[in-house]
Image (cartoon, rainbow over all chains, first blue to last red; front, side, top):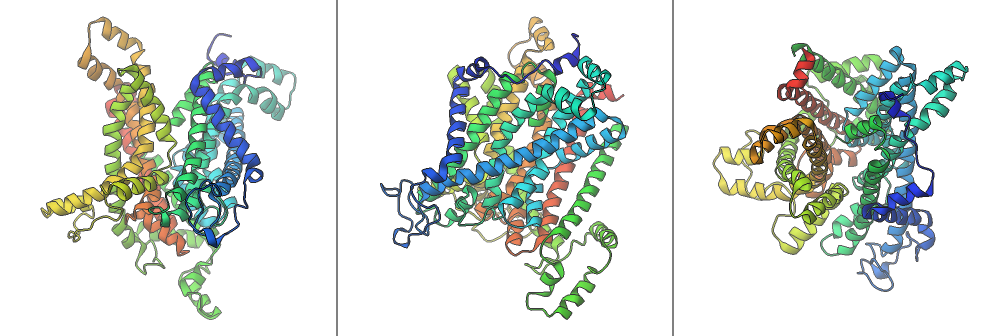
Length: 301
Length: 335
């Protein structure tokens, strides 16, 4: 067992504390981990941390600059921007997580089935994957969310519709090589039913590149959700969603710098954190899995 | 080679066909009733029914699909409810502006991104090369529309170095190509050319920065891969150094894969232009799409979007063909 298929099942997601600590040894690993941790904590606890109701208006304090009462200033309706930015993390992260989960499950299922079943079904599914990979995702998401109408749930569906294909590709190439591996043969000999082979024998060996892709996609999903909110297809004001907030700040950009700055910083902080963390994970855990690493690399291209 | 090209052309045609069918289906799931929209909000039910009949919306779905595909082939894309002009005419009006923006941004990506990518691997001092790598990550994490707003606030608002938005403040040039920088040059209007070029700067930067980050990361890993390859070690062992080593051995081997990523960046810039145009009121397809969205006029949205998808597919086709031409290994595999 020293030939190519071997590499596919030597990779395992680390479970021990040791390998996690190794991740934090590099400065970019530690910094990006802390960044993502901050985002996650704020997303979970944001509304509880917010000093004021993020949707409460105060017409006596319209567009007031940052002060002790309003750390990030207020918007055109006197809403407290600090509270809104904190609350916004929840919308962005929840939507991003759902987008990634939906596309992860859908894409992995399609890829694993296509790779394991093979034949014309597998071929057709692989072609379908290629087709979707060939589309510029953001454009399709715009068209789909225009068709589905305004709203955060519609945005999530539109993004999942376009994002599943990269997971399918990664799962497919790895499953094709794992299909004939000895341990899969052994499972088949024991009359293990196919669904169990796919979920218990093949999936664990191909999971790490998929999980890395998922981490990086959290960044892109967050960016796209904000982008769709920004062009008016996502969350509707006064929902404290970052993209929608940035959109409504545009009219005041030149005389109320704080209005556009803080939601933008929050968004960039989130994206940069997850992009770098994904990159660190990729370097560390995809390294032993040649096939998975190549699939990831090709997709980034 | 011919078989390969024919196969790729066929695949592109299939992609465009699937796109068109997808377009049609998308337009049918739109929550708004197209007949109601076309007839106007105050129309009586009889009027709506008459419009429905006129538009062929009472026909079975597959009949409508074939009508739609036929119209598409004849270049009849319907009429915009917002501008009251044929969508095809609108697109001819707005598309050149988008193309102008995307191409100038792509030039920026190439001129800045490629050298920086090489610098990130082998540049001196080490510290600055490392900063370049980190900068590339941050650039990738900057959403274009946020960057666009920040550029407006800083470069226009604080420094006053570049115009806020729009395409020109001079009298418009006669419409020859629709690409204004080119049109001004064709009629010899230097002041006009300068003015449009100044209007192009901020949107191009906003659109380019994310792609520059991506290109730097990609070139960096490609350069690293090629540098460690056996053929480069051999070339060095045989005494190749400096510019010769870089251009004839390293760059030549990076060219095919860099070409692929540049094609991808072109496609992404087309998509990204929708956001950037809206910030800078750039009168391109993106602005047209967003205005149509706010007017609940969905068919121009979907048709323009899919026009952009079509461009993307065709660019990819060209890149694949160029790939065969610049990479003899691919050609040898095909033969």
